[in-house]
Image (cartoon, rainbow, N blue to C red):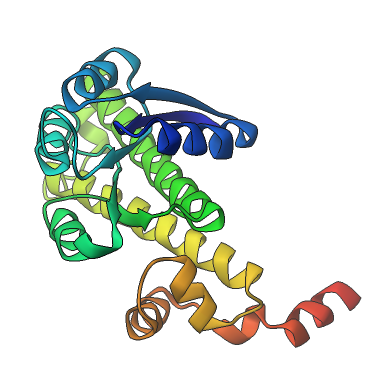
Length: 221
């Protein structure tokens, strides 16, 4: 999977680490050492995912998040923070951040979050392409029932479905790598066991489908 990833962090070591992690995965990594240059880089480069440090020399990460969401509401923004500031990072997710990661950065964890964010970004891009196509080439009037017009609400439903599908794929991928271990999967997905259990139930995901016994049976078949 490839895409553009923007890293806004004044810590050169963190920027270099993310670059070393994601470039071998096929990502193009764009670096910025402060909020304003990061926002400008987003405008010119149009990344698929952004990683933003909570504290920057010129502005707060939440301020950067707000500006990025104003310009591109569907851009997944992952907040980077220290362990002592997890509450602020959680607040950032309530303000629209896609997720948050604590430093020091864990390679496996950041890859899972990055891939999940990219999948969400790609699915939302597909929805946006559909929106533009409908605007440029609307269906013939006779093909649409008067009581069933294409509305903004229906497109929002498509976007919601796309986001749910991206989340389902991410959970399945992590469960596959943990052989159905929900505790390990919850840790990799940066959530708690109860939340993961509820999401799996809502998305129709069964952990036993990914355990070692099931995997072995599938291989034998």
